[in-house]
Image: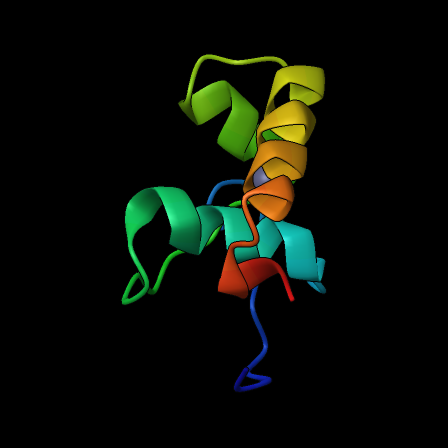
Length: 68
Ligand SMILES: [Zn+2]
């Protein structure tokens, strides 16, 4: 994974975690340039952070390569 400085495009939080980056790519597409932190992405998807974390666990359990 290229290690460009990624930041949340809503709140500008920097140093997004691997999970935050991976879940944005998984849901929005691998070529996206704007990323979201967990809080803003959950808000964007109209989910709670807990629900988004559960989705991440689901993706991991499915063996999604983005979460390796
Ligand atoms: Zn944010």
